[in-house]
Structure formats: structure tokens, C-alpha cells
Amino acid sequence: MNMRCFVGLDLSPRNKLDLEHWRSVALPGLTSPIPTRTEPGRGTKSSRTTASPSPASTPVPVPAANFHLTLAFLGTVDARQHEALISALETIQLPPIALCLNTTGWWAGPKIVFCAPTQVPDSLSELVRQVKKAARSAGIQTDQRPYQPHVTLVRKAGPELPPPLLAPQLDCRFTRFHLFESFSTASGVTYPIRHSWPLRETLSVRERLRRGLE
Image (tube, rainbow, N blue to C red; front, side, top):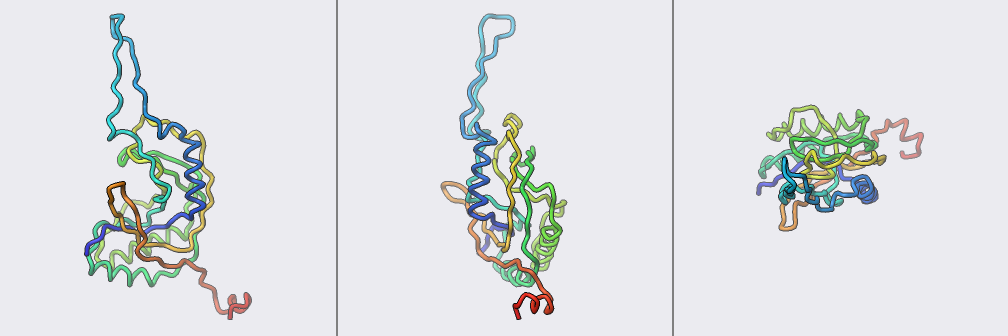
């Protein structure tokens, strides 16, 4: 069975609630309809009304449950690729990842507002490298552009959407990475987790003895 999926990091429930609250403060008019605007007619006393944008151009807040950081988008994966991918990802052994979401941005192409870390930890870059290597070994092509970690906050965001009133300051820690499925429903897209792998410290025998773990 084919599956549209990606590998990523899931924000904790606390992080998701905090980020949702920040968005409601920083983008207060996000869910409000954009009013019509009246402009004076050129050379007359009449006026014309600028039509409201179509529903397709209305900014759409991403549900807090969907907040995540993508490590590698895989597209549609078949059963053979899925099995090979799972085996390859199981070999990854890296420590937990800590980062701070403390800046925002807007990308005109995909029309999204996002938050991101200003400092990308080496451990995250290495995880991305190993995830993409695992994907390639399973015959799956991934994006070769430089990795830009981010959490999407708003979709269908045009340039008329005002920027956030303040920057976020959200400390996140990740102890697992996941294979998500991108699954469309009547009420929107969801990202159920299909597989998970731990991120944990790899201690030497001496360090384990020092900590009383042996």
C-alpha cells in the first residue's frame, strides 16, 4: 500500500499549546475576515468597493495538533521502499535535540508563515543528513536544497497578512523522531505517526559506570 509521508520531529503537547497561544497574540487578526475597503472614485464623487479576497486566498491557521518540524519529505512511498526505509532508520543513533524557536518568516512560494530557530544545532543537521541517507538507501529521493528547519503556522498567507507583532521564544527538546503519514480527510489534513525511534545519549562505558548505569 502506498503512503504519502515524511520524517520529522513532533512538538510536545506543552510546546504546541504555547505556540498556539503565541500565535493568537502575535497574529490577532488571523481568524477575522478581511473587511472590504472603500476607495474614492477617480475624478468623481462616487466610490468603489474593493472586493474581499476569495476563500482560497484567506489565510488558514495550521491546527496546533499539526505543529511539527520536517526533517525530510519523502513523497509517496510504496511497500518495498517503506520496509527498506524502516530498516535504515532503525540504525540511526543520535542524542536528543534542543533548540529555540525564536524567529519568524514568510515564504512567498508556498505562501506560509513559519517560526524557526536562529541557531540550528549540529545534532539536528546530522539527523537530517542521516535521515536523507536512509531515504536514498531505500530508493527514495529527497529535497537537495539546504535544510531550513521551521514550523508552519499559517497557510495560504499572502503578502497582505501583517507580520507577527512579536517574536516567539519557545524552547523545545526532542527525544524521538518519527515517520509521519500525510493523510487527507474531509476536515483537513492530519499527520498520524506511523513509526518512532529514540534519540538518546551514547555514553562510553566509563561514563556509564560513573553515572551508575552499569
